[in-house]
Length: 116
Length: 118
Image (cartoon, rainbow over all chains, first blue to last red):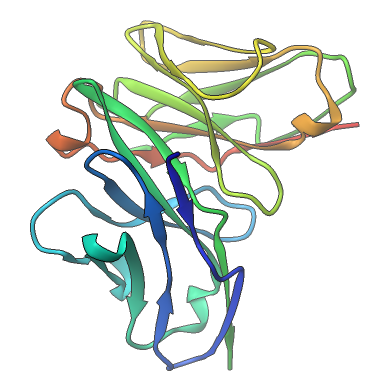
C-alpha cells in the first residue's frame, strides 16, 4: 500500500542548531516527493519538491532535502533553524495517474518547536 | 497574483445539516482537488476535478460530493454531517491535469475552511 511515514511526531531544537526531519515512503511507481509546511491555523506552503535528476534539492527558506531511493527516504534538512521555522511539516508523495496527475499522500506530520 | 482562495474561513454546523465550501484556484490552474485534514493528522485526499468532471476519488463516502464550474472554481458539498466531519478542508490547485507531475506540475494549497460540527 502507498504510504508516508514521518517517525517523529514532535521535535524541539535550539535556535541556530541544525535540523533533520525524517520521511520514509512506500510507493510502487516512480514517486514524486514534496515537503510542505503548515503554520498554526494556516494552509500548506510548498517548501520543495523532487521530481527527478539531482537527488539533493533546494527549497525556500534555506531548506533542502535528499532523495535516497535505496532507503525510500526523503529527509528534510536545514543547517541553522530560526524561531520562525516553528510549524508543522508534512512529507507527501504523489504519482501520475495514467498520463495525468494523481493525488498526494501525506504523512501525519512532524511538529517543530524552536527553543530560544 | 492571487493564490488559491477558499470560503468561508470558519463555520459551525449541526449534525445532519449540509455544508458547501468554495474554492477559487490559482490563476492559470485548471485542476482542483479537495483534502480533509482532521486535527493532528495529515491531509487526506477527497477528490479531484478537471474539466468539470470528477477524475479521481479517495476513500470518502457519497455524502461528499463536488462540482467544478467553467471558470475552474469548485465547491465541496457534505450532506448529513457527522461529528467526525469536523476538520480543516483544504482546496488545492495545479496548472494542468494532463502530463501530471512528470510535466513539472506543482500543487498549491489554500488556507482552508475550518468546519466544526456540533
